[in-house]
Length: 95
Image (cartoon, rainbow, N blue to C red; front, side):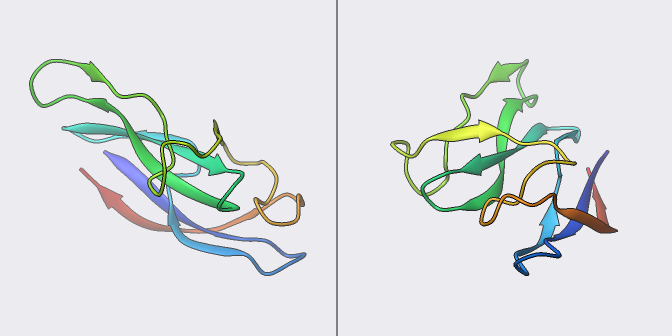
């Protein structure tokens, strides 16, 4: 079962209300949080599909495959200003 969290930057106010903040797995998919330098956002993207065996999925920005992304794991810098994001609360448990 995966968990999502609410993230907030105390310096600039950037907020992500539902983010895995790293790597989380459910029964059918594994998600990884990525930082897109172009969008200046954090996204949870699928990295493993578990429905019919194990299929690895390359990380990419959901807006464009041309954007540069890197894996992101809390605690880590805000995608907007670079300060460390605060993990506020567990938001949901998903499967």
